[in-house]
View (cartoon, rainbow, N blue to C red):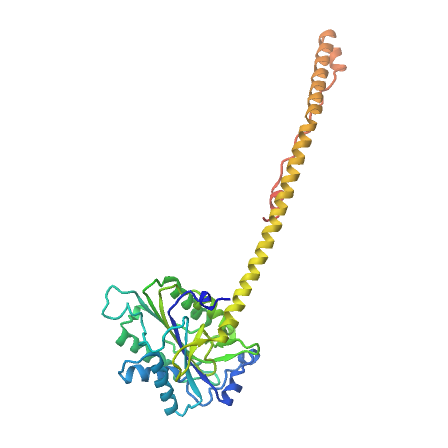
Length: 377
């Protein structure tokens, strides 16, 4: 299993946060049965703090940071909020040097480059309005991120898809979130930039799957790490620059990449958790391919048997040909005898003693039931 081959795009960067407290560990164990009725408790927070720390670092500080310096500054902001156990982390699709300057859009796609690629953004904020354990700041996080992207990086509003449960935007349901991720991959080309933000609840199922919780989770279920890998991470075209902000209370690793780096670390290292998701998907696809090959093998065997039967029938037909010719000669002889009798007896006696010619029975036509009863190929 090659982790880099599993993610074709060489330029994906994801910010998220890991809460290492015992309380978070308990909250992070989310039962699927429970989430159908009740959202996980936000542990006294109005929402995920990661986006807020990110914006304070890059917007308010007005300082040029590297990737590693951004993590350090975010960690300091979180500590100022009293969140000492919350650690921001950076996941990447390649082993990039983290002391490089942070790039929210492609280096070849800054706001001064009119011929650069298209900059797109999918921003999702879910407050779960009216539900127990609802959040309150996710809409503000999205609005602030929208302004940040437009003001500093020239992302146009027409190239943004914003999903919020505020009554003024499209709902942040599972279908639209996954469709948005899939669609942005389909239309992006080398040189384009993608920014993705999810602010809301996240969690972990009993079988260790990391999940995002969409607004319609009671009806459509959860968005799993496997779905995010299959629909998005593995589908981003090479040459596209992607930055992702996953801001969940209890799920910082839902969109894992092959490499990871934490605050204070000078380089990225292999992410052991990534292989569990991508490897499982690869094995599933391999199983389907094997089944497909087995099905093709059976089909080929049936075609060979059919071909053999056809050849056997053809040989039998050739062998029966002399007998059929003999029957035709016999029929012709009988007809000649009948004609001679007619001539000798003047016709009347011939009619009484007429020898009838054997005629084959007409073939029955196939009706519609014969067509409809055929097995589908």
